[in-house]
Length: 379
Image 1 (cartoon, rainbow, N blue to C red):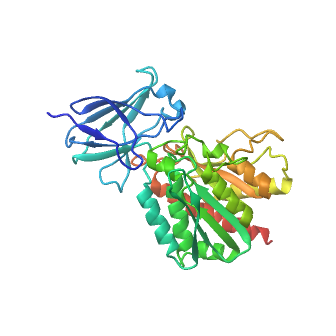
Image 2: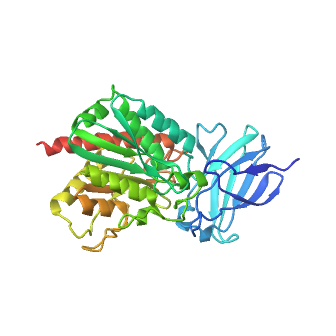
Image 3: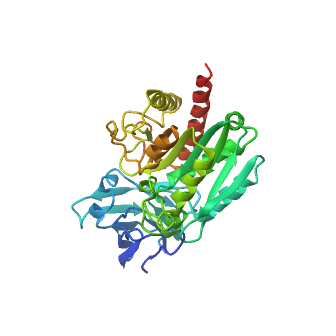
């Protein structure tokens, strides 16, 4: 039978084809633009209907997060709408670390990705739909090095200043699926959570902080090879115009509450990280963060507090990271939300694992938690 064909020359596509033999292939993940990071893959396979694909991605012990591969199943779709999981296994001793993906497609076109992709075209649809909603103001905060707009959606009549921003790391596509769910809540006049939040807050939403990295198929950096979440202390127009534009707008509006939305490669659960260790730490500010965490933990089984990042010691917070910088700069209750690439072992869903649908549902839980948190301030 003829060999399959593998392509990745499209929005967020990323793979290197080493060899193809029938329905089997040896593959590798190229490095991000001008950097040493690699982890994100996204490619299309054609010509395999009715055959078992055996796809081996090599040299993964040199990837950015080799701990992300054990227990991980690749995402797969035959219609680019529903994303399931393909049975995968990882052998760290095979050819420098090899992920073997096995899947038998029903059709002649099938797509694989590290997580369900969120294309720039879908991003533009998301922005257009939200911007056309009543009470939503669109603002272009600036442009990227590739000339793409940095889109911001602003809404609400309240005094409490909320910033939600996502996808500083472009391969963490969970973050923009979360944003889609959040904007659905915030722009739906029939949604009581969104309606009450708009009454109490002025919300600033940046669905994608890194359009260049997203389109290029990077895991972690922008078009200049810069990790944006290490630029918040001194962003520059030459290296990190995205952060500079967002932080400048924050300076104009102020920030009371901020959530920076991400995905974590290795930890198979959703969690938040705070701003312990900032020089100006105030117990009241920290209590606001921990109270929000408790509310979210109570509201949904898709969130937990047992696993997460090590907290910084007093005075040792990294102020180049957005959550720390925003908490320090504005006295805000700030946090980083992390979602998994793998399935949640406490609440597994074998067909899809952690999925776009669960990202969107978690967004609603986060916003409902914010509303409850705000109402508790009144008591």
